[in-house]
Length: 330
Image (cartoon, rainbow, N blue to C red; front, side, top):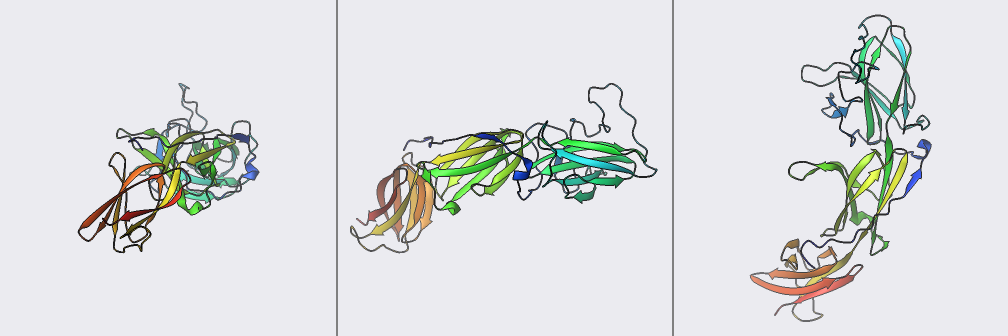
């Protein structure tokens, strides 16, 4: 195995139209979408993007308009406000799994916004006192926040186009099924990187086959199989109103290590193991008589330390292998 070897990755991206009613999934906490928007710090410490790119926009104000619209008064009789969410432009209104959060329209001295109400109803009509509010519509990890104005006794309707899609992740081993799903781990990161090359983790510990709802955009996916170095990264594009299915194929095998005095002998206990790749980089450290690890296909050197003595062995792993490696004490 060469240093920097790229493990094979197969990304099958299939798009299919999806009705909102078919995504009967448990909502996750909100998360920022790919497109950059002004962030309004909320009371729970998380930033929520505000539609229009300006947290100070009045309700219905066009960002390009030279004349700002007047602000509503802060007194008078309440008015009904109906909230409607849409998965994508031109899609039917969403009928389930929408969470609405209502915040005060102006920030506190510390910059946070006070949460006034949480509503778990697809299309609620709420009575609000006159004034300005921030309203966040969330659907899984997808969300959108708008600033609205409420006028005395003036009914209003507010539409939220969330631009959400779904991502279903699965993995294969040497193009075959992976039976032990507990050995798989998926993580979703942002497309963008900071000055140090780090990405923001959006969601981790994702189970195979689960549809994760996200704002539309490009995401970085990391698939890990087992406890070794079988780690593959790829990118996936989420489109509004569609599901993207990413299938990642791992070139990996399973190896069990054994320190013996002779070929086929009993395993020696109290052994410390270090596995190196062909470039001399440490891949895995463990201890015990029969450590088992999943490693990316390639060539390896292994060190078995027992007491003050070190014993060296070499082995190779091919995709789909299950093998036992004996290191002989000589």
